[in-house]
Image 1 (cartoon, rainbow, N blue to C red):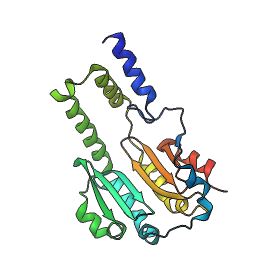
Image 2 (cartoon, rainbow, N blue to C red):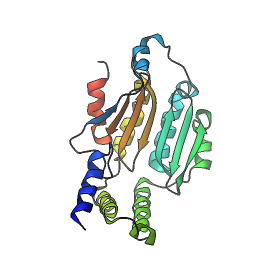
Image 3 (tube, rainbow, N blue to C red):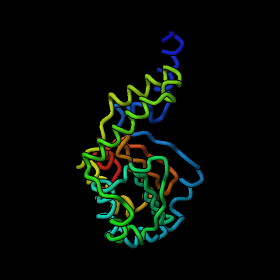
Image 4 (cartoon, rainbow, N blue to C red):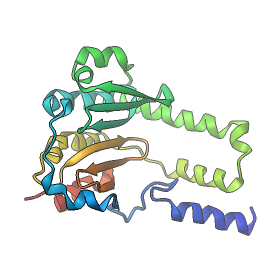
Length: 221
């Protein structure tokens, strides 16, 4: 590989918010600020109670079931709009959209999401990436991109089971924070990150490993 390609490879990794190799090991979180007027008027806007809020006690067990025992590898929960989006290891290029009412029903979850234990799901994710790397299409992309994605495969560690349980079990608390409360959250077991948007339009991208520390530093005591 040429010196130029090496420089591009390092630049691609360096300039990405969440790079091909994931969050930097020393990073607790990445914060992204949005519309400043949203922050300025936060206290004036009342909290909207959505179907997700109304059903949160039923939804938490379903969310854990989806991530631990079903095909879902990414889960988006929209508290303000009541929208729940899922990505499946069996159909990885497509995103499905569900209502809170449906996801709260255990029988719906059983029908809609194939069962697979967590270790097997991780194995399937590894096999999927391996099949991509063996493809002729993959081998036609620039070498520096192949190096980046190979590095991702070597360094990759999925979200731990206890981390999933920890994140999902705190959703109600994060939503009920008095001032800066959660609007939506994305949990991705492949990237091992949690993306949270707040009512002030701020976004936090937190590594699952550091989620507990994030809560300690940001939740009111």
